[in-house]
Image (cartoon, rainbow, N blue to C red; front, side, top):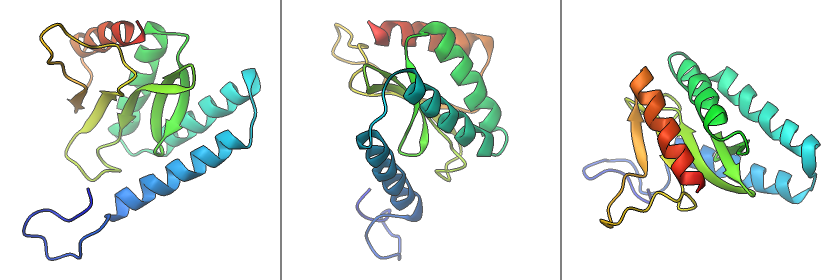
Length: 153
């Protein structure tokens, strides 16, 4: 968001969370450019993502852990990584789906979403690309599983 909400008295520009996300993404891009490939890089990416999840406060930590388990079970070939400082899962190096902590974003709910790389297109020309997440029921796990499998193609 390039400016504050309508009626905000704060100066226009990026808020603290947006600046932090941009800095995190810049660090991620630099780390990717430094190299590293294969199993060693994948292990480092997953370790960084799990460390980020471990830093989260409850209930986001539990949500992120469960989402990671569901995504990994649904699509074991997706590679865990950080994207804008938040957990994400990539296919061939491109982020396919992600988790955004509501607490980090100072929102009332967390988000599970899909990038434009996801193959979720519907014939109707209308489909959801992100979902509010306050808890993860068994029905929610089934929905994420179904969507991740479809997104992978």
